[in-house]
Image 1 (cartoon, rainbow, N blue to C red):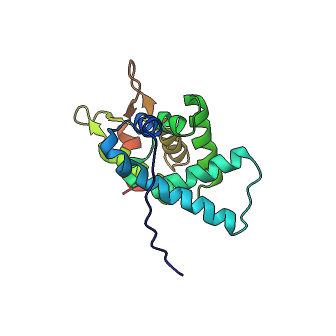
Image 2 (cartoon, rainbow, N blue to C red; image 1 turned 90 degrees about the vertical axis):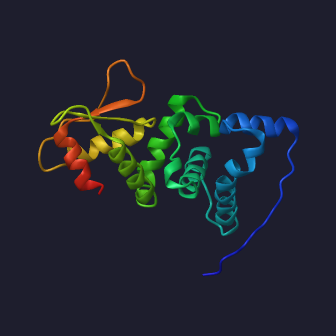
Amino acid sequence: MPELNLNYNLDLSDDEAAALADTFGCALPDLGQNLQPYALAALREYVEMFAGQAMTGVSELRERRLVAILLALPAADFPTDHRIARLFNLTSLQGRALLRSTLSRHRNRLKGTMDAAARRFTAACQQGAVGGDYEARCPNTVVIEMLNAQLAMANAQRAPIRRKAATFDTYVVSNGAFIELQVLYP
């Protein structure tokens, strides 16, 4: 399989650079570093188009773009619902729906990406007291939904992961569910 090595420069207006820096939440000097993973995703889209892999509509185009982004980003940079919404100029609910439908339709291609997100969540879990529940922050509710679906299919009945009261992105994992997640995502 041929491997192409492409180098390029991109000239931006001051307004474009400022808008991109705002979207990525970075300083202007860090813009190239933050934009780099998305360049691969954009090139992949063109290759698929030129190779005749046609898309049928806007929703499929967005899903393909999100798949390319998820595959291009480092595993540690799995985007939040809010980040996806900002990248695609959608509301937070639309961004979450886009991620949910993309993960459902492209689950085989994104299995490694989602497994890495699950392992990061499990690794972040901290036990409150000996033998007690675990807690971890996760800014992406779709990852929690995926983990809860896995727990629902477990051989032994497990309590679902639930949001901690009075928090936005902290979740509580029962001891049994945590053990099950460690088995599923070592």
